[in-house]
Amino acid sequence: MAWIDVASQGWLMLTPTFDIAYISIKAERLLQITGKKFAQGHSLSHIIKSTLLNDAIREARQQQLPERVEFDVNNIPVEAYVHTDIEECLLIWLSNRRSMETQ
Image 1 (spheres, rainbow, N blue to C red):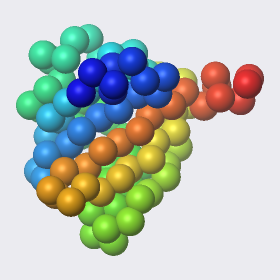
Image 2 (image 1 turned 180 degrees about the vertical axis):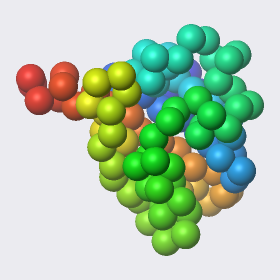
Image 3 (image 1 turned 90 degrees about the vertical axis):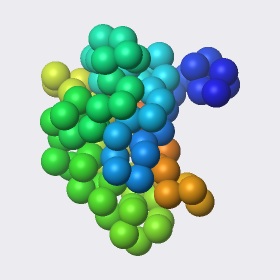
């Protein structure tokens, strides 16, 4: 998982029950989460209060297709791509839309 922590985007890995199995350092910063130990093992919906993200996760799981969604975290626009995995886990790619728009 070392590549995830050096990636320029944030990454989350969710278990089949939508608990956080892994969160990258960049994802922690984007989502304003303090420490992996706080987030890992907890339900994503308890950590991030975003109906849009939760809906995209459910849709990706049901359709077995990637889903894209935009939502805000404390007035910071975040873009996410939810990807299904063959072992029932979900991968979520996160990026700050504000920094993407300035590029």
